[in-house]
Length: 119
Image 1 (spheres, rainbow, N blue to C red):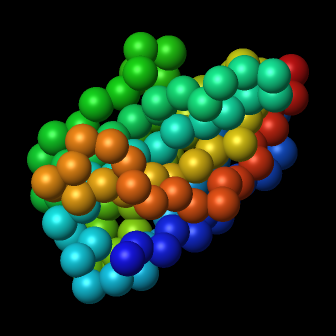
Image 2: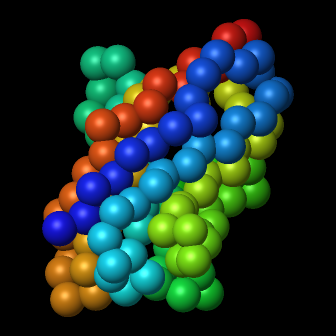
């Protein structure tokens, strides 16, 4: 079992930055693929970014490429999402998620953290 707790959300003006953190419990954190998703009001949850177990491979949805960076610190059981040049359309609840290397679907989810970008 993996438990995920996000933090770092808040209110920021357009063009500003935030860094989200996701602290994970469990001794096998380093073997999990970690991802960030978001859900805006009235919209479906969407993929934002993912990182493999070593941090050597990352991928992003097109709308955040060049602005967001996902990283992880396996010694701290934490994954981060650095968000720069924020836009009002980035406003959403951001969720951290994890899946094992033997799975193709995200099995564990955090409770979410609100990010609001004002124009």
